[in-house]
Every structure is written in C-alpha cells, then in structure tokens.
Length: 284
Ligand SMILES: Cc1cc2nc3c(=O)[nH]c(=O)nc-3n(C[C@H](O)[C@H](O)[C@H](O)COP(=O)(O)OP(=O)(O)OC[C@H]3O[C@@H](n4cnc5c(N)ncnc54)[C@H](O)[C@@H]3O)c2cc1C
Ligand code: FES
Image (tube, rainbow, N blue to C red):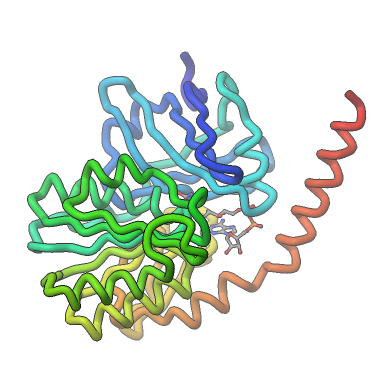
C-alpha cells in the first residue's frame, strides 16, 4: 500500500465515481467542509474535490468525482491500484459545527456527496437534520442510504419525478417549512443557480443560509487570487476563507460570470481528450 494509491473504486452512476485512497496524514486531520487538490499526472491540472469521508485508523480518505471535463474524465478512468500523482490538503476552513437546533442540508447532484460530511457532523453535534437531495433524475441521486443514516428526515426530489417528489429542492424546502417545521440554519451545495435560489428562499423562510462556493481554484492556499468571490461586499478567497460562506450577501451572479470565463477552452480540452482517447482505443 503506497501513498495516494486507490484502494477502492466504485461507480455510483454513469458519471460519478467514488475513490478510497491511502493518504494517512490527511485522514488524520480532515474536518467537515474541507477539500483536497488533486493532480493525476505531471503537468496535469490542479483539481479541487471535497473530502467526503476519512478514516484516521486505516489512513484512508474518500472522494467522489463527477466527470465533467478533461481532468475529471481522466481521474475517473483511473483504476483500483493506480495512484494520483499528488494530493494536497486538507484545505479550506472547516464548517462551523454547533447545535443550531433544526438544520436543512441541501445537496444538488454531486453536491450531495459534498454536503454529506457536513450533515454527518451536524447530526453528531445534536442537530435535527432535514436533508433535501435534488437531481435531474433518479440515477443522479447519490449516497441516499448514507444521507439517511445521518438525517432525521430525508427528502429526495427529481426534475422528472422518477424518484421522490417531482420538482426542485426549493419546492420541497418550502413545503417542509409550510408543514410547521422550524428550521434555523441551512447548508447548501450544488450548481450555482440552485444555491442562489435556495439561499434566497431560505432568507424568505427565516432560515440562515450558508453555501459552499466553487470558483476556479489553482494553488488552494490563498496565493493566486483565482478563487476570489464577493461576500458582504468584500473580496474573499474561497480556498482559505471558505469554501462555505454565509449566503445572504454572496454575489452569486459574479460567481456565475467568473466560472464561465474558460468555457470555450474547457470545451476544446474535452474534444481533444475524447479524440486522443478514441485514437488509443483504436490501437487495441
Ligand atoms: C472547493 C471545491 C470542492 C469541489 N468538490 C468537488 C467534488 O467533491 N466532486 C466533484 O466532482 N467536483 C468537485 N468540485 C468541482 C471540480 O473541481 C470541477 O468539476 C473540476 O475542476 C472540473 O475540472 P475538469 O477539467 O474536469 O473540467 P473543466 O472542463 O475544466 O471545467 C468544468 C467546470 O468545472 C469548473 N472548474 C474547472 N476547473 C476548476 C478548478 N480548478 N477549480 C474549481 N472549479 C473548476 C468550472 O466551473 C467549469 O465550468 C469542487 C470544486 C471546488 C472549488
Ligand atoms: S486558489 Fe489561489 S487564492 Fe484561492
């Protein structure tokens, strides 16, 4: 067993893979809300992913990756026994875990994996945890049994109605509160528009919202400024000051603009990756 080695790989759905990796130092100090930066090979991109789980005794960390572009396609093609080139972490400020009373934990798509360690820590701190899991369709709802184990109430929903309530996480959250549930704080991780609208709804419902931001990151240590976001009218670095921030004053529109800046180059990188991949496949 060597450092950064993939001890277990599990496919959660067509585009999402779970990896258990040998990384004892990170496993020893990880906390809910933190992340690592991965590289697959020399010269490869630095990619931030959330620490979903860790086991200090076994020296393992668990990460879950959705294939969305060149680097994540490459990571998800690694096999059990392969190793990541390097894994930097734990990075970021852990989420403040305390007894808020009743909390809503809202995850969208792969954001369900990212919000899981927070739900678990909030449950351990004595909160009543109400989890709302949203995705386009049934297969994209991941970790439902794990989320159920750390929640008092679990409410899946899908855009197409193939699992749980038909509709969006905001519809579900609204009906929970209308049924008389008093929720004090909410933790949201998912696509940026989903976080924007969920945070707004939470404020309307008297719930204090927190959202985990996912700007482009490079060094992950506060040096490059690539991950800057605007919170309370101030510039903050998501990699060191976050990634979780109080959501009432986040400038989500700026975040949407900034994360979209490299769309064309990201598209070209995937096209080249797919072309290279097909060529190699053709040799066999
Ligand atoms: C703190 C944090 C935690 C994250 N946790 C997870 C996780 O647990 N699982 C998971 O699947 N994804 C996670 N992500 C998102 C993941 O980092 C991006 O999907 C990945 O970088 C995309 O790289 P790519 O080359 O495959 O795709 P690209 O084609 O390069 O990009 C696809 C999209 O991902 C975003 N992105 C690209 N590069 C970066 C970067 N260096 N930093 C941040 N975002 C980027 C962009 O918005 C882009 O539109 C997290 C991001 C952050 C910031
Ligand atoms: S990633 Fe460079 S400052 Fe945050």
